[in-house]
Amino acid sequence: MAEFTLDCLGEACPIPLMKTEKKMNQMAVGDVLIISIDHSCAMKNIPEWARTQGHNVEIEEIDDGEWEIIVEKTK
Image (tube, rainbow, N blue to C red):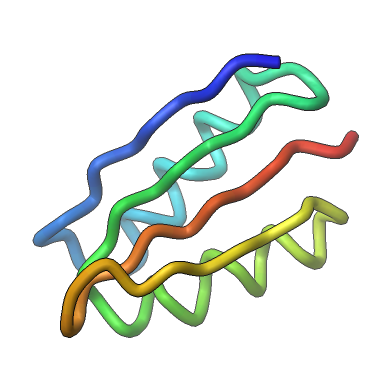
C-alpha cells in the first residue's frame, strides 16, 4: 500500500477532480490518495465521484475552508 498526495489548494473545479481521476487511474488497489483542497465545489464533487467509483472516502477539515479528502482505491 502506497500513499500519495495531491495539492489542489487554490484550484477551482473541475481541475481538482480531473487531477484526482488521473492520479487514481495510476494507482494500485489499496493505495491511498490525500487531496488538499480549499474550494467548496471540489469538496462536494471529489467525494461524490470517488464513492460512485466504489472507493472509500474520508474528509478532514484542516483549517477554516481547507480540507483533506482521503481516498482509498478499492478496485
